[in-house]
Image (cartoon, rainbow, N blue to C red; front, side, top):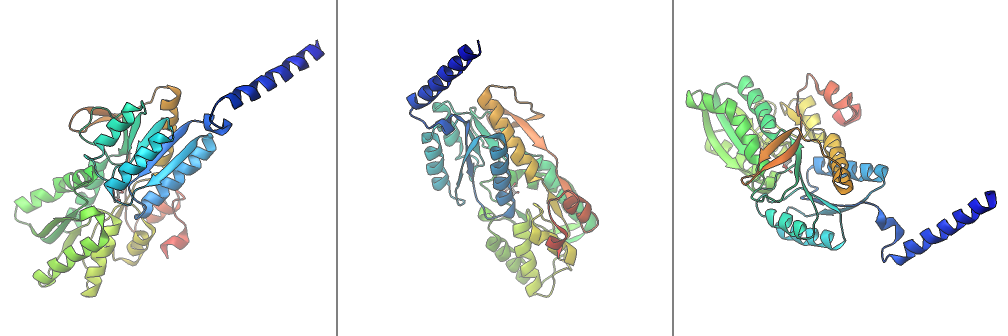
Length: 338
Ligand code: BGC
């Protein structure tokens, strides 16, 4: 009986080897293969998203192929084509350009590859499977509430993010819920209102420099959509000896922003835990690949359809709670604040 069993096992093992060889793919590519297309690595948060997804993919034993388009839609298109040619099972796509990325979703669907829109929504397509992000209107509300409570009258510079990024629209919409009534009542006077093309800090620097110059440095509050643009605005303030004197928002909980909050030049940031977002993305991708049910908690209109959405919470960070929110959660170390 024992002998029979060992013969059977040997036969099975040999058969397995043959089956493996019979396929044109190496044995390792039998793993679930996920493609990840990121828009940039310029902001620290995207570096963290990538690192987290790579770590979780490794833990879960799946193959993750990562491409980074340097804020360039042509580049992202070429990279997504390459991912599809590599036979991915699922595509996680954080678009550089919300509407242009619709054609990438259509392309993936032709290959029967499901698509998860990551952090930034892809608009104008009914083929998108899921959207995974933070509550972005809420992020804007956190910024708008904070700055309007801190500075309820005076001259404001209002910046928003890249017009190609749907999040930028949502952040501003949230912030203006608090700021607009003060504009309408004449308490707040907007001296500059501009979008920061491509989220490039240098563009924010120019906006703030120009507004300061045109208004004799009389600025009382700045709505900066993220930490990168806040850093540039603070640089412009510093050149006029005003750093630390003008309340300013941010977002992303970058290490440099955490330092500025500690030294008092930046008033706040918004913490979006990229570890949770990255982990959820890989887990959802694996579920889709296995044909399992994906739990969602909301739906977001992308202009064509309501996209099933997983939305995570964001938190305000100020000097008062920075240790609790960023250090105790292990997102940063004490040294990062110095
Ligand atoms: C993200 C922000 C980021 C910005 C610039 C947005 O879509 O949600 O976290 O700061 O892009 O990369």
